[in-house]
Each structure stands twice: as C-alpha cells, then as structure tokens.
Amino acid sequence: MLQENYKTVQQKIRNACNRCGREYSEVTLIVVGKTQSVEMLQKIYDLNHRDFGENKVQELMCKYEVMQKDIRWHLIGHLQQNKVKYIVDKTCLIHSIDSLRLAETISKEAGKHNRTVPVLIEVNVSDEKSKFGVKVSETLPLIETISSLPGISIQGLMSIAPYVTNPQENRPVFKKLKKLSVDIENKNINNVTMNVLSMGMTNDYEVAIEEGATIVRVGTGIFGERYYKMQQ
Ligand SMILES: *Cc1c(COP(=O)(O)O)cnc(C)c1O
Image (cartoon, rainbow, N blue to C red; front, side):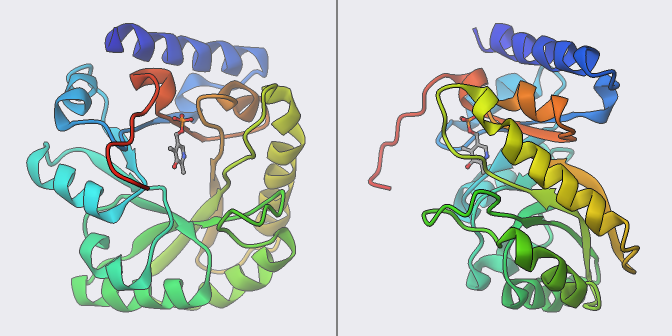
C-alpha cells in the first residue's frame, strides 16, 4: 500500500512537471513522517528514498538515532530556540526560520559545530493568525539582517498554505511566494540564494509545482490519515 501511494505521488509530481514544462529532477519530494513509526519510514527508505521531514525536534532526534545515516532530515515545524542545539548538526535544511533571534541562535550553535546551516525563511503568505512565519512585508528586511550572520545560509522560502477543499484556491498563495522569492533574488544579497521554494502538501502539491515549488512536503498522501496518540 505504502509503495503504491509513494509511486502515485511520484507520478503526480511527474505529471505536474510535464504540464508546466519543468524537469522532474527540479522537484524534491520530502516524505513527512510525523506520528509515523520508524518501521513505516523504513519502508519508504527501502524504496530508495532519502529526504524525510519532521515537524518536532524530539521526534526527529529519535528517528535520527535509529535510522540510516545517509538520510537527509528536514525540520519543517516550528523551532524553539532552546532546541536548536539538538538538531543543528542533524538536519540538512531547517525550513522554519521566522525571527532574527532564532537565526542568531542557529548561527551561534553552528559555530560550535564549525558548520554552516542551510535554512529557509517561513513566510505566512496569507497572514493567518494561527500560523507561524513572517509577513510578506517583513521578509526582505529579516533576510537582509540574517544574511550578515556567520554559520547560517539562507537558501529560499517556505510556506504552509491554508487548508482548502479545492487546491486551486491556494494558487494565488503559491504565486505570491514565488514572486517574493524572485524579488529577493533580484536584490543579489550576499550569502543569500533563492533556489529553494518549499511549498505544497498532500492536498495541493501539484498546484504548488505548477507555480514553482522545488520542494513538496507530503505525509498523508503516502501514509494515509495521521492518528495522534497523545494530546497535541
Ligand atoms: C504535516 C506537515 C506536512 C504534511 O502534511 P500532509 O497534508 O499530511 O501532506 C507538510 N508540511 C508541514 C510543515 C507539516 O507540518
């Protein structure tokens, strides 16, 4: 079942790329394993998949410990400053930078490990109160400030689009994030690239690809509905 779901998602990514004249290799699928067991993730790993996303530091660390070391772990959820030290050497990309203080903490911890940590800035495109992320209007100033910090390297933008019944409703959200990334790229800021656009989840990743996503984050589409054992 998992294998079929995985293949279906890959095929839909391929189809979306074809529709808009993009290469399949331009889009990275992140398999979002939150609430799923290591056994389930291992099944996807065995299909030769290496990019996995978690939204909680604790869960990422547990899975990191027991799974293969060639996995590329993406932290996609909100990150608290006091937890930065646990994951700064375990992630290939942190998708959820939304404040200068968080970036400063990452910069400091990165220094201890003598590495540069690749990150994305999380943008709250539709300005939803319930969501983390910076406002569109605050994104450029934040990036300009962070760009001068050592040990942290901005690679692009990330957004979590609203939950909608018709994925087409999110097309303007994706367009807006893409436009913002092009505008920022045109500023040619030192130490900043806009090569990565992390947008699109199970419900709307095909539309996101049509609008320029280079990373899509899919959980439910592969594992089915999530069951939360503990109170969130
Ligand atoms: C859970 C989660 C996803 C995956 O959501 P699905 O709808 O299950 O595909 C993607 N991005 C983030 C930030 C998430 O927390």
